[in-house]
Each structure stands twice: as structure tokens, then as C-alpha cells.
Amino acid sequence: QVQLAESGGGLVLAGGSLRLSCAASGRTFSTYAMAWFRQAPGKEREFVATISWSGGTAYYADSVKGRFTISRDNAKNTVYLRMNSLKPEDTAVYYCAADQKLQRNANYPYWGQGTQVTVAS
Image 1 (cartoon, one colour):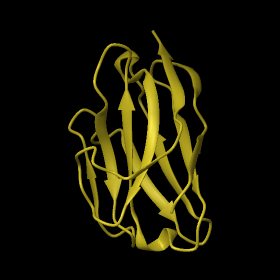
Image 2: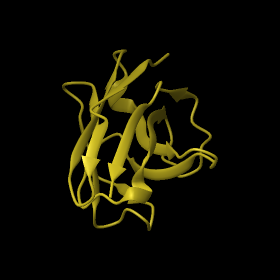
Image 3: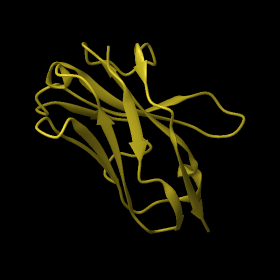
Image 4: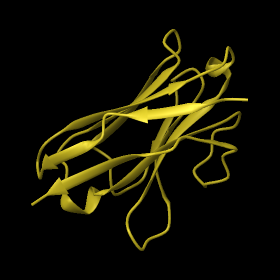
């Protein structure tokens, strides 16, 4: 069992930056692939980025590639999402998720509660 808690969301102007954090409970964090998804009002949840258990492999959605960076610190049981050059279309609730396999679809068994990111133009 893994419990996840996101933080770091907020209101930012277009072109600005934010760093989201996701703290995980449990001793086996380092064995899980981690991911970030987002859901905007009236839209389906969409994949943002994922990172392997070691941090050696990461994948990004085309819409965020080059602007967002996913990273993890296994000693702190935390995964991060650094978001630069934010756009109004990045406005959404951002969720972190955990699974023992690296994947880009939403079939993750463990999810956090989400953190709101609002980008004002």
C-alpha cells in the first residue's frame, strides 16, 4: 500500500514556474514507478510525465515536453514535477500516481488527492 500527498500548486502568471511535490508513505517507494497526471474542468484525466523507479527513464506528454521535468528523490520518498514556461492551458488539478510498472495510461493503483494549478494570462 502506498499513500500519496501532493503539494506545491497555486496561482501563477503565464510564463512562470512552479514545482509540485508528491510525498509517498511506505518503505517500498523506491520500487515504484511514479507519474503525474492532470485533469482540467470538463476534460478527462491526461498523462503528463512518468519516471522509473531508479529515475533513469522518464517519458513526457508532447504538450509539456521541454517545459516540465519529472524527478525523484528515493531517500525522501518524494517525486517532483518542475513546470516552467507555464501556459493557461496547463491549468488543472495535478495528481501523482504510483505503480510497479512504468506506463503512460491511467491504470495506476495508487493516487494522491491532487493539487490545483492555475495559470493566469
